[in-house]
Amino acid sequence: MIKLNNKTYTCPVDVTLSFIGGKWKILILSHLNIFNDRGFSEIRDNLPGISEKMLVQQLKELERDQLIEKKVFSLKPYRVQYNITPTGKSLSPLFEFLSEYGINYLKEHGIDYIKDQQLYK
Amino acid sequence: MIKLNNKTYTCPVDVTLSFIGGKWKILILSHLNIFNDRGFSEIRDNLPGISEKMLVQQLKELERDQLIEKKVFSLKPYRVQYNITPTGKSLSPLFEFLSEYGINYLKEHGIDYIKDQQLYK
DNA sequence: GCAATAACTTACCAAAAAGTAAGCCCGGCA
DNA sequence: TGCCGGGCTTACTTTTTGGTAAGTTATTGC
Image 1 (spheres, rainbow over the protein chains, first blue to last red):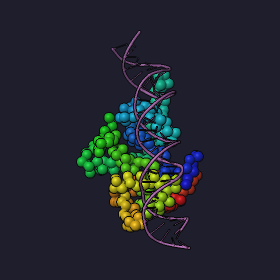
Image 2: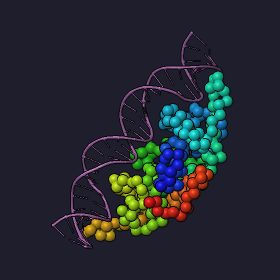
Image 3: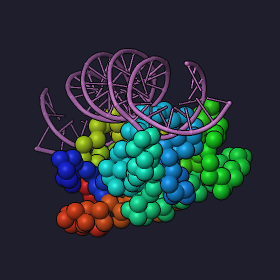
Image 4: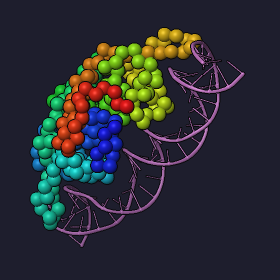
């Protein structure tokens, strides 16, 4: 058992998953891995089905864990830009593996997915 | 949006996660990736904190998705052996990445984790 | 002046995931 | 004979997660 910040983890895998667990985080990171300076609604519009509440929540956690960063470039009106950090980028082999594996699985089940389809809508 | 077996997925990553999502699955697979012919209680005893109900559930789903297989080698008394399948093994780069990332994170936070510690208890 | 858009916040509710604890069948062993 | 271990099942409760929808501040565009 590993103890860190008042939480317990069974193993290192568990530690990693605590950052990127949750349905949307990997998708958000994949998106920011490709696009820079994304606004809130640009991200939202690329994740069909996500609610704004969820997006806010996940973005906050990703920011807290320093996988992404938020720049407020205008206060009135309030405008922001999200970017992936180097730490977040270091997870990209993971996104790629998960994606490749999924694509391969789909292919084996007769579904052809266009690999470089970066926008989900 | 991808439709498969009456379910919808946002992207291939989502598809992959549907097999290995859930707190325990990756841990079970990591374990069976190292050890062969494991009995139910051997697996249980290596996942501190898991309930038998959870373990049964996850093992069933992993078996259904053909990532692991179960051999019943004695009916009376009832004795079984779990093994990872080739499909399950093809995910091992993932387990390794998640583990390495976690170990590295821990190191950066002053915790030294023995890399080849395969048993969690 | 009014609607639309950006970037949220808030409150409430439903569904899914997970935990708790007891029980069951069977054979081995003292 | 009684208890222990293996491999579960079952019923019930709690926790976590996620969804819905409305409201907020402020600007731009018609």
